[in-house]
Length: 308
Figure 1 (cartoon, one colour):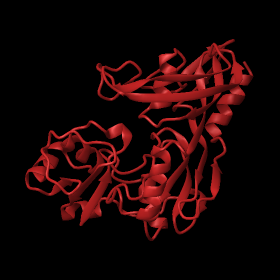
Figure 2 (figure 1 turned 135 degrees about the vertical axis):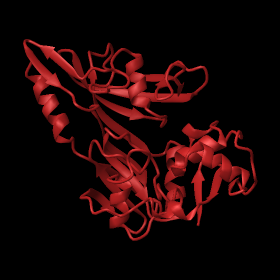
Figure 3 (figure 1 turned 45 degrees about the vertical axis):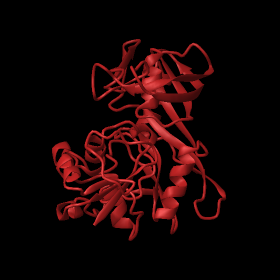
């Protein structure tokens, strides 16, 4: 079986072996072996493992049989916002991994989706069929999955061309100086940690975040965010760079609780929710907006912050 991965903006510049490993769950060393054996090609041509992939390129992997059984259908309840023959839109719960990977071979969103949908886009197969965009494990809210290749390419292009509008609600530590604004920086890998991204990288890609403060609390803010670009960890990195990290973010802010007036409000996960997504239907072009209500833990946190 052939598996095709399209290089997204945030992956451009990665080594071919690293890109394949991240997309397929294969080890990097095994990806190098497949490249050497001619089982991995870029735009139908052979490249070295050190080749730097470019945005929009098509990486084709002729997968070993062992890969075929990695994405096992599982009957996991999902909150389906929309479903037709072209796509399925889901309100992803917090603390759910998007697709199988090291340490998360089952119980993922995609394990649940394949048990519901008889057909998905082949792009991203076998582990990420139809995945158009992503949410971090702890981030909740609207996510869209394509059911056929044509819809998949259409939706990906809307994100690439910044036609799709993505809005989030988040609780931030402290109070932002301005009621609204735009954060514009480069975002790239942190020099101090490969797990982290940085707003001051040695090299990176343009990242634009716009925000409006909805409500101010003592030592916290409820903020509406629109991301113009879609860089890895963008919202988390941008607000951490301002000194106002997302509450509950253990990687960038470590602000997992606020104590005031002898009362403590805890944040067991990052308080970040994808609440609205606007895009054009991939088949007929009509404008659609999908929304997801705040999850209970964020509602509770807002109520507790308002009481101190």
